Structure formats: C-alpha cells, structure tokens
Length: 291
Image (cartoon, rainbow, N blue to C red; front, side, top):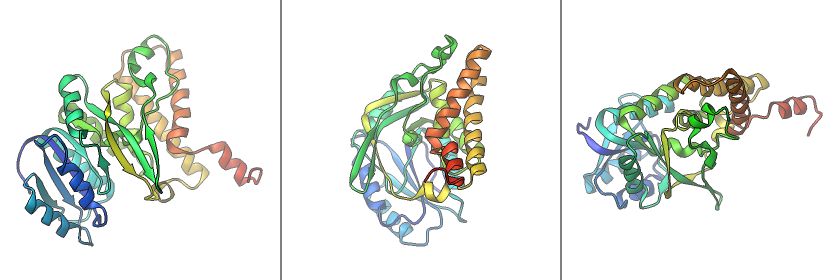
C-alpha cells in the first residue's frame, strides 16, 4: 500500500474500467496544477484495468496503484477511498474511470479552498455529456447563504446544485467526515451523490468555482439499475432523502417552527426533482388513468 502525505490527492475507485481509463488518467496528468498524487484503487477488476494502471504508474511517478484484497461493493470502495483521502492529504477528490475535466480543474479548486478556509468543498461547473449532446449545469444562486436565509424565516425556492459536486475537491479536515457519514447513512444507491452534497450546501460550506469544469459522461443506466420500481420503494427513498436533509437543521442556527415546517415541505418537493420519483404519476399509471 502506498504510504505518503500529499496536499492534493486524486482517488480513482476503479472496477473494470479499461475502455475509458487511459483518457481519464491523461486528463489528470495534463492538469496545469502539477503537485498532486493520484491513487488508482483497483477493486479486484476482471479486465485489464490493473495492467493499464500499472503501465501508467511506471511512466508517471505521480500515479500509484493500490489493489483491494477482496472485491468491495461500489459504496464500500468509495468510502474506502474517502477514508484514504482523509488520512493522506490536505485536499482530495474522487474520480471515476470515464470522468474528465478542464485543465484548470485542480488549480482553480485548490485556490478556492486556499482562499476560503471556512469552506470544506470546492465545487465545479458540470458538463453532462450523453449521446453527443451536452448540458452545462450551474447551481441556483439562491443556495448560497442558506443558513442566513433560514434565520430570516425565508426558505430558498430550491436546493438546486449538480449532484456531481460530490466529485469536487474536499478539505480532508472536516469535509471528509461529512462525506463519509452521509455516504454511509443513506440506504439507497440511487441519488446518494446528491444526498451527500446537501449538507455542504445547507451549511454554506461549499464554494462554487465557475471557471473549473467537470465533465460527466452519462449513459451508465444507473437510474434503471438502482432506481426504485415500486410505489412504496419510491416513497421510502423520497422520505429517506427528505428526512436526511432535514436533519441538517440540527447543525444550523436556531430557526422557528414555522420555518422548519416550510423547510421540510421544500425538501420533500426537492426530493422529487433529485430522485425523479413522481408518486402521483406512478399511482395514475398503475390505475391506468395515465398512459
């Protein structure tokens, strides 16, 4: 196992990523911020992932390979990487084997955390790519200063931010604890990324860096694979999402009962957008009242 401490650590929790991994590794190698360490965590891949990673590490000493002794679930492997980042770096980020980013991704996010010692997450603009089409996602400005709005009795109209912010740069001290705890407590694979980020946003611990871009390649079929299929499954996940976000109020300045009620209603509506579960539509379709 690699043993070191680094200011910036990039962690690749990889399983069978041979088709896209070289491009993703090249993207990190070509960052204009050069002083980093990247650890490729091979989760007992059954393809050429470990071989490709080993070859890459031989040509660039900033890259190291760490192999799991036994195969972990995707969630377990991500949590392993978060703990590793917490123990070995000042700042760290996660990176899937097909993710890309702008050349200034690391430099811009590092500067943001250096300049804002009160923030625990530096988050980029997100570009989602699917079937040749692209969408650029930016946060709704109303999410910034969330605790101040609540203290005034105002619940912002949305909690809209890209779920890919979970791949932003995290301050190991403080930020890793939130990331690990929320990733561990949410019981559903679908929508966990958005759930994890919510606490950073609601506690005003995230800084958005517009000029840094993260490129997320859609098309893995994660919604079809992990999304709930039954009405009660969807209801359960929406409740878990809403209640988990609502509990963040315990870490905010005191707010009135009326504001708490309005906040829960907002989070319940927000969970519909984040999970894509429209319960009314599900019932109407099940009753054959909507096609």
